[in-house]
Amino acid sequence: NEYEGRIIADQFPLNKLLEPEWRSAFFSTTTSSGAPAVIRLIEAHYDEPEILSRWSAVSKIDQPNLIKLDKFGQTSLDETALLYAVMEPADASLAEILKERPLSTKETMQVATSLVPALEALHANNLVHEHLEPTYVLAVGEVIKLRSDCIREAPEGQEANEFKARDVRDLSTLLLQALTQQRKLAVGATLPAPFHEIVTNGMSGAW
Image (cartoon, rainbow, N blue to C red; front, side, top):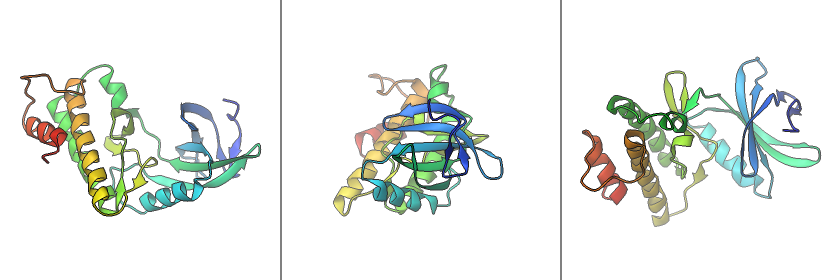
């Protein structure tokens, strides 16, 4: 909270602390044009080149269901080395909605048809998400988007396929959560088409 009111990289005001997350924190901010935005600050731990490389890779992907990174870089505040990423603000997360109710089949279809192309774009660029959870699924106006500041590069060779398959399993679990608010399918339970096949085959690794 003590960072509120400060300026990052001589241009981004830290208006309000939105959420702390491990060694990072999210603040509301504004861009040079005055548009609202969110800025993530990460305390540098000698992994700055790796994080900046990830952000550079994902910022080059033009996919409407990935949260857009507008600007990122390195800076310091009170002699603390920091990384920052400025991104578009979201109106709500899937986690917030699921605290109140499950999604309808139609709503879950919208989530699925939004996240699949986002995930395909990441995998095509040898990136993996590894955080396919309701907290990372965001609504920006009428568009469903996946957080993109937390991706990582996939390893080489066969291991890359294993990491991508894990994303697929996580996506299947997320769709189950959207429909039922649960991470496991109850014995004997069925889901509305086409989600029963998608979830069971995705979670088992068959698809």
